[in-house]
Length: 264
Image (cartoon, rainbow, N blue to C red; front, side):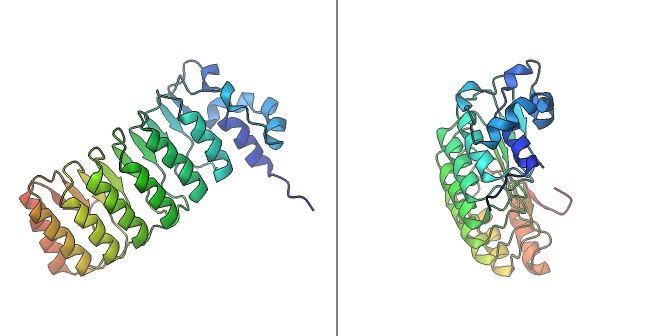
C-alpha cells in the first residue's frame, strides 16, 4: 500500500514555498501569515511540485517557522529559497523534525555566507552528524552571530566539530548547547577553542554531562587567553564538583566574566 502524505505535512509543504511578497507589510514572517493561500497549493505540494523559483522572502527580516514539525523534505527546498533571500537576518527553525539532511541544507546556506545573523535549530533531532555539518560550514562564515542547537541530541563528536569551528570562526558571539549529551571530551574540544577564540561572549552548556576534567579544561583555557571576551558561561546541572566550579568561576573573573546560574 502506498504511503500517503499526512494532510498536515501537505499544508506545511505548501506554506513553506509561498511568496512572502504577497504579504507586503510582513517583516516577521511565519506560517500563520499564509493560511489563506494554502488551499490552492495543497494539490501541487502533495504531488511534490514545488516551483521554488517563483518565490522569495524579500519582505522578511525574520522568518519564524518554529514548532511546525517540519521534516527534512520541507527544509531542503526552503534552504534553496533562503540562499537568494538576502533580507532575512533571523531564521527560527526550532522545535521541528530536522535531521541530518535538513542540517546539510542549512549548512549550505551558512556556507553561502548570507546576511543571516541568527539561526535557531534547538529541539530538532540533529544528532552529531547534523552538528558536524553545521560546524564545518561555520568555519568560514562571516555574518552569523547566534547559533542555537539546544536539546538536539549532540554528543562529544558534535561538540568536537563545533570546537574546531570556534577555533577558526571570528564572528559568532553566542552558542547555545543546553540540554545535550556532551561529556568531558566534548567539553575539552570546546575549551581548546576558547584558547584562541576572541569573539564568543556567551556559551551555554547547562544540562549536559560534563565532569571535572571538562570543567578544569575550561578554567585552563580561559586563564591562557587574556583576549577572551567570554562573559557568560552556563555549566550548571553538569557533573562537576564545587572545587572545579570554583576554578571556572575564578578564571572567568580574570577576564571580567562569570559563570551563570540563572535561566537561559
